[in-house]
Image (cartoon, rainbow, N blue to C red):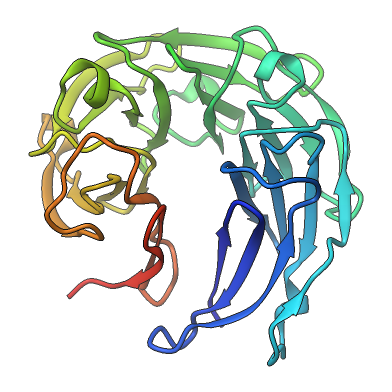
Length: 322
């Protein structure tokens, strides 16, 4: 079975996509408080963890095994509710260590709020990090990259509006900043993702197209030395469409590109400064405006090879390589 978890302004929708030609909505989990444009969901083992910028929302926990055997659309209730924070923009989970990180919350100055989810139905506060202000999005990994000083450490990479911050969060009681880096012509440092070998970090700036006149721009940093990250290259698309979220799978970078849909970019030669678009799916043909219309997010990690998209106007899409 493959399931899609689609965040909307009022709920998380659970969709059985095992037959991609006949997706079936199993039900929804309503917001914990009020509606909000911003809602995010991540998973750990058999559980989903949901946050929202809705006031007082906290973190809902849902047991995904409840989806098994469902044949009639249902309205679900949460299995647990964590209230150590209220609103949060996003949630990040390191699946190897059993910790969740709520970012952009009303705690720790908007920096990451640590939650121990090793017992998913009893999440507990585990500290936080407030030294580098608001964190809009992040990736957290158990590090196994080229910088052997940090092998096995839990490393947080925050996209913090005007810089990228690298923090060692192994000791939740004493998180330590490793380094920070910024770049030319910052609009809004939005979201980024490691290459699989953890040598490079691909960053999207959400406002440099709209406010600074760039074509779609992905900024690439050399992270082979975490204490001394450096600018490596910029990749520019063909239009002024805004980039939103991007994720790496193997040698491909999947970029949610708003009015230009999703773009699939070959990064196999990124070390030499070469990135090449090899595929795309445009949900708004004929439009490439610097607007917040179109593809919001992309998820390319299903074993089937199917890829799911969330679109601010068009809703939910299932695509695959032709």
